[in-house]
Length: 420
Image 1 (cartoon, rainbow, N blue to C red):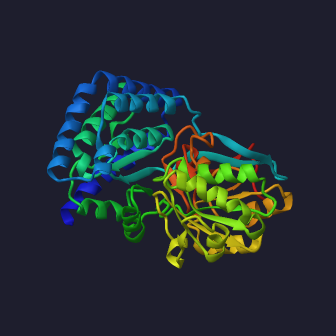
Image 2 (image 1 turned 30 degrees about the vertical axis):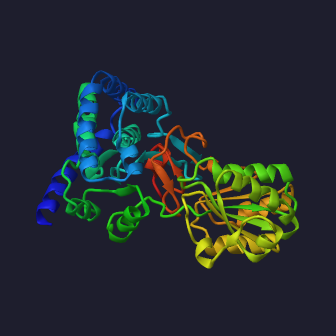
Image 3 (image 1 turned 60 degrees about the vertical axis):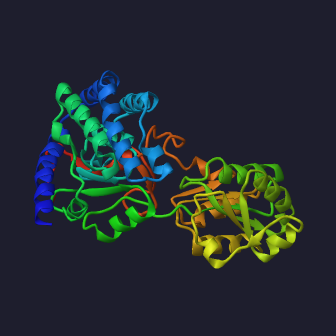
């Protein structure tokens, strides 16, 4: 562990120095670095794909699961998508230095907020080499330094991508150490990074539940994360029938293995007449339905398996859905309060009072009214890009974009005032 600690300390010292310099880098220079990197991804594509081929060969030898190999694989289209992603981030507004809420006080001073970078961000992720480019670009544009730790299965790909990113930084006049990759696969290095509170200001895990749980349990550094995506759609008594069916189907079947997919459907007992239609449509798409007793009675003649207490607390990430019939809006919100992971919840209703109560009282990162949970996404929210989703209450909640990678400090503008 001592060797791991020394390696992380060496990276941390460089990152801390780079983060101070990043505060002085103008937006146009950061954007130029991103554009240079995009061009290098295209011109050096052969080298990136050759490095990825080494990772894919090792994946075959180690019998890596097909889904993981798909995330790991790069091809010309995926490398081009990485390049375009950098260009899109370059086109986003820079939050750093923005001043807000500036007001005069009776003393004559002006008081307000200025948005500033977080500092050094450690990002721990699995499988996807594109995260190396995405995470570095978001940290760069928001004025932060990044220490990246990708999965061991992608080590060759990540090294090739990091070399290009650092080359682009150098050519643009940005400190190279603003992007550093932990290019060794020793697992002890993760533990050392999580404990590097003198050098790292925040950790962001991107990966499966086990990774996020480990980071959350072991980190001595603040963490931005979400563990589960147990999302709910509640069909109220005053829901429009067609709207309710369309939202329920989209929220569940648009994509299964994503954190903003619906995992539990709650239906007011007076809207239970919609269940046979919804369940039949779900089953036509290959979704297994598990329901409470009232759901099974309402869907007589359709195959609905018995839902257990464990089902209500499960993020399936698969074509499986649990359904519960409830007696009231309060009962729906009670269920959500007990079982939700505080990610995203939706109410479908034409009742203004019910919609307002749901928005106000449901305590999740994203709360919606008459919209699919699948909209809980940085791009859909107008952030342009996101580094992940946060279900924490501090410091950022929901999709984390450029602004989420910054914080605010108080600024005071005076004219020689002194306090009497």
